[in-house]
Length: 612
Image (cartoon, rainbow, N blue to C red; front, side):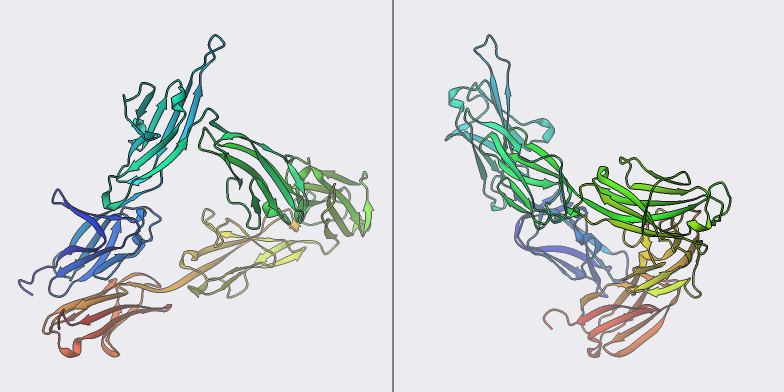
């Protein structure tokens, strides 16, 4: 081992580089045009032969490369995109001395089509016959390196000072990304075709791009009219047509529709300014806006709300007499039945009550009240002031919309001597639960009582969301099913009774403990090592994550032949050393690390050196 050199590394490039700069001798910059293929090779030396790993830092969060590392000598990215620029590192490690690291910065060059926007300011009329009209033409193109702009009027290039009526300036606050042409107090010759030329000076062979704008005395920002009611209240299944027309603007504006500033529903049909929603559903309700744009001034926008009639989430609850510290219903005491429905639009909601199928009117002993229609969801209460044996029976509250068109919702509530508040328990053997990652698991709470309320599941740590992303999950049978369970779902879950479809009393609660086991994640998953006969080398397999992580066993094999085995106690890695490579030593080495949940495998392909 004495005198063995630590690994060395250098990066060489192939692929479609425009140029490589040695920047101040410290950083190398590799320039490439967007859409081309990036190819970087990491040349290493060292004995034993080092393991190679490519990583990337900097660059946007959307770039998936950070999460992984590439264990090959050559890093190849086909059709490279602008967000994949940044610094790439090659790291070589063989267990001797410190790892060798080299980096190279990749700069992706591109030039998008320029866009010209126009802003006009019209001064006050002075002495009735004169007014000043100043026009700003603003050109902008996304690019790397920074773009240079130039302007033409017709065929004539415009430059600062070449024409008294024209000023050209780059606003300092956009760092030179925009070029503004100011036409002061418009003259007849200013009505012309203007071209903005965007250039990155042909770097990487990227050609200049230009855009034409025709300025006339009719140039104007857009204006529109909506030929619809606002709001439009419709029944589900109805076909809705919204018409938007241009009432001004030169050049002719383009019209688009958006819903809640988002995409339109999938089955919507857009034809010019007319938007049709065939068989509208409640999910398609919202604020629809027509937007007209022609790059002159600000876009014009007009909106209408589409309200789709509907009744949903019908629920009830029973409130025992609040003046007695007892959750039960008793003869001679007060009891209140409440009904709740989400109605659209809320002002059309109508409630009525039945007892054993017959209409019920409000009386001194049976008081019916409704909440204000502005308060959502709509609620109605039936207060039985002094419960008698003859009051036992089935009470039905019926919710309907004033203008009809959709089915009513009926909710039945039984009041009898068997109506009792709920209790919650966890069945034997159902907590703690130990499952493997990827399994389907049922968390269960048994609910007794009559009626049986909706159960609310949540994490015991109230801030942590449930597997579906919400803070609460409702269950009608007390079971919470988690499909394809993952390691983040380990923890304590709380089941609690809700007032919905049950008693409006203090919630009953129970806890279920869940542990998710998963097999070891290891690295490297695969790496190729070229090594000459008689040479020494080391292989290293590292555990990144595992649960349980206490008892991890490992087995090193060459092909199917077992080389060594053991247990990782405090360490998170295992090494296998070859002192002198013989012909039988070539082939695929594997290191399998196992726990109760499964195995993770590192693979190493050991082949002869180049030219062997």
